[in-house]
Image 1 (tube, rainbow, N blue to C red):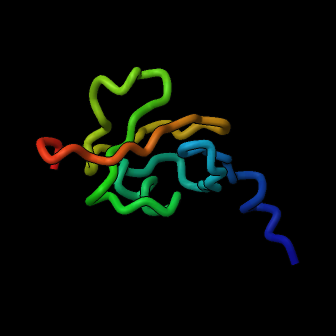
Image 2: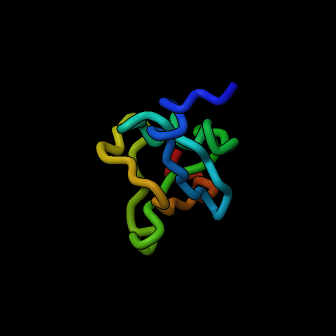
Length: 81
């Protein structure tokens, strides 16, 4: 049986175009990467419209996760690690 409470709370976030369902209101960048199947030790998370200036810090919470949010997982450079 489908849990309707979960379905109504679920938001679809896109990481590198991959659909990632999220039910939480906020997660850290590390948690989002893990949910999308990327290793936080190897990838940095960016907001798609941020032109990859600065990554979201791994332990920083994305406070308002919105349905349809687009994020990018980019391989870390040696200096980013």
